[in-house]
Each structure stands twice: as C-alpha cells, then as structure tokens.
Length: 126
Image 1: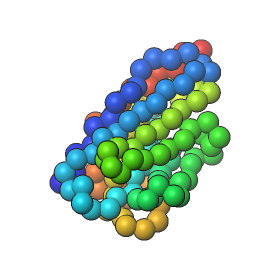
Image 2: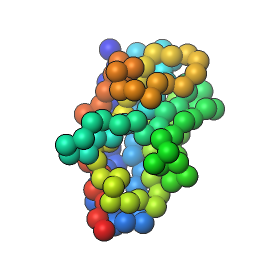
Image 3: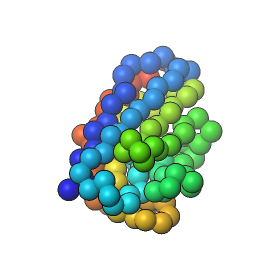
Image 4: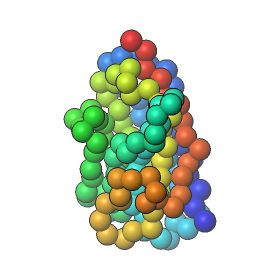
C-alpha cells in the first residue's frame, strides 16, 4: 500500500505563486509515475501534470503549460508542483496520484491511477 500526503495549499492573489508537495510512503521500493489532478466545485477531476519515475519526462494540461512545473526528488519520496502566475480559474482541490510504472509517463485520466492523496485546497483571489 502507498500513502500520499499533499501539503502547501492556501490562499493567494492572482499572479502569485504556490508550491505543493506530495510525500509518498509505503512501497517506496517500487517505481511510480506520479501526477497532479485538480477538482473545482461542481466539476470533474481534471488532469494537471504527470512525471515519469526518473523525472526526465513530464506532460502538462494546456491550461497550465508554461505556468506550472512538476518535479520529484526520489531520495525524499516527494513530488512537487510549482505553480506560478496563478489565475482565479486555478482554484480547486489539488490531488496527488501514483501508479506503479517503471518507464514512461502516467496516464492523463484519473482512472489510470491506483493511489490518491486526500487533496489540498488552492484558492486564487482576483
């Protein structure tokens, strides 16, 4: 079993920045592709970004490309999401997700992930 714990959410003004962290524990010897999803009130959970196990490959939703950066530190079992130039439409609960995968990126659909964190709220005021 894998446990994911997100942190770093909060309230920020439009144009500001936040850095989310996702600490994962449990089967740390396995290789996981990781991702961030988000869910706004009344909307479906949507893909934000994914990173492969080595950290050498990433993919982003068009809505965050150029503003968000995903990274990982496997020695610390932590994945990060640096969010810059935040917009009110970025307001959502952000979830970290993991799927066992030694090679390649994670999927862009939520159903493709086996493990989820509890989420952290990000609110961007205008």
